[in-house]
Image 1: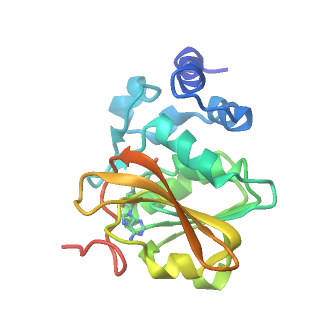
Image 2: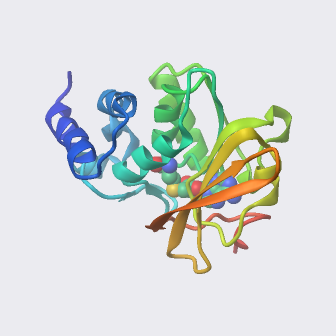
Length: 216
Ligand code: SAH
């Protein structure tokens, strides 16, 4: 119990009733993770609102609905080995850690990676390994993954991520030709190749790296 319990419960109700998130396990985890610890001090009161919020280095913590939706699309089990690209505040990372067996998380901006790591420690999360690197190259030594989540928009599918998927595994990634809007795509690796599903429009910050957008 904390002072944010009521706004947090409202967020869960909105996810269930308005956004039709059906997976009660995901809703239960989102009802337990203190999202207000992942936003800047001055924005704490807004932590459970229905939108993305700015964090450091011009990045954002994703809208709760997007976190729930992407997590739902990964269909995790306690055995899943997950790769997350764009850990940002670490909020999505913590949600994944409660539903999967092991999470490998990558964040490109050093101070965000450090802060996310501190939050994981503070919450005593033991099954996450987080590094600061260009996630568009994936994380070869821990591949193959059951599920890969990319939380930033890419112009094309980063080939290393496709290569690092298990057969039967999936990649959820926003893909778009301009830097501001994308479509949420799920790619499934089958025996024969890759199958793609489109889950509609979304808006993420750009994925910057060797297999994403060029940085400055
Ligand atoms: N799920 C996060 C969202 C963070 S926004 C949260 O809820 O807090 C997307 C993040 O992707 C940003 O922090 C950005 O720095 C990071 N990012 C962009 N390109 C990246 C890359 N190539 N590798 C790893 N992280 C990247």
